[in-house]
Image 1 (cartoon, helix red, strand yellow):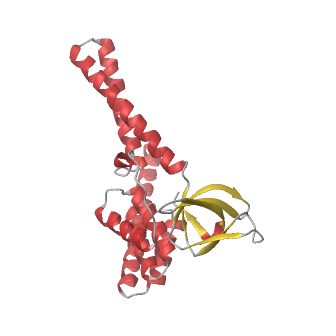
Image 2: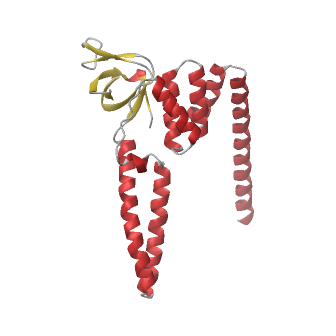
Image 3: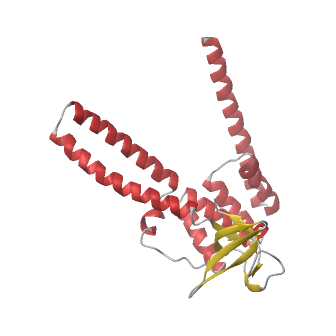
Length: 245
């Protein structure tokens, strides 16, 4: 049994090392092509890592965004910088590129009070912090039940307050990411009054614009977009937008 377990562990570690080496070769290849100005090949490599091998890394999305921008595809550049920002919201380079891409694509970012907190943490970070504090609370509470102590009581009260705050933050961040259904316009598109080419054309939306998906109907999405002084709604082909989720 011990031999089987040892073989399994060795195989697992070997497989992980091989996968890591393969990924590093692909990353080096992508970087080399980017430096040579071969942006199409760079995009192909990074997209393979993201789409086929399911590598979920903010810096890959960041590099992919740069490659798309250099290749003249602003919509996909915005989409990937949004994905990078979602995973690493405090990274200065990612934030800087996001601001620039927002500016050139004409996006309006309406700030809300709770964004002060939610924009600085990813959903994973908030979940880990909440879980850690909850575990600590359970441990201290168990110790207090076994041996009541004034110090434990004060810590429990403090942890309850912190837990309420992180619960609120977790709900807000979850709602922001899952309910808003943020998407990016990948190519300049006509927005219509209904889910069909036969419906009236309401307005044209440029690539790179951040939108929210309200509903779906076949190959069409009902969307809304914030402008400086109003919010517009309409229907757009699903193939013309990319989800940030």
